Length: 109
Image (cartoon, rainbow, N blue to C red):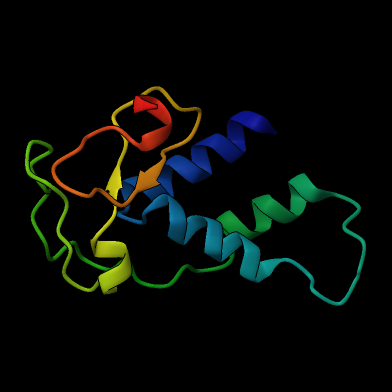
């Protein structure tokens, strides 16, 4: 069943559906009333094969140049003032720089 589910998912991706839309489609099809799912693979196959997805949203913005800083439009002023630390962290670490620091106080201290 794994190859079949992989193929069904690949078809959705090839049709222009982003992974987040496929995930939302699957979650929307799961029972939310506590009904047990006895055959999760069969349910997933049904959702990917038989339930039509929402129309994909066309990409209206061009891909961002990775060398450019991320856009801050739409961010709150609190988030726009944060910067990601360039130090070695398990997860991305944000900090509020005082000047033009690129490392958080934990990395410099």
